[in-house]
Amino acid sequence: MLELEVAEAARGVTLVVSDVLGRVVAEPLRGAVLPPGVQQRIELDVRAWAAGQYTVVLRTEAGSIAVPLVVVR
Image (cartoon, rainbow, N blue to C red; front, side, top):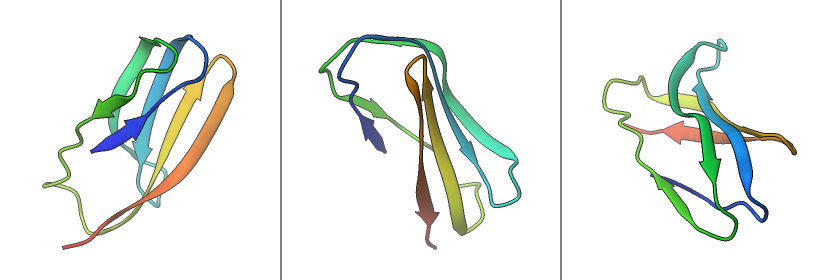
């Protein structure tokens, strides 16, 4: 589960998870609208993913942030 919160209202929010080769394995948010100050919980079903490191990228109108995600078996 991913948890995120934006300080200001955000439109056109995209959340993408990519593997080490840059292939998109999940896109749980696309064009979403997020209200400010509300914690969002996003479920990711990683059962079919290989063990290893992934990159989670959150993009909003204000910018983007990338964080690592590690799947351990």
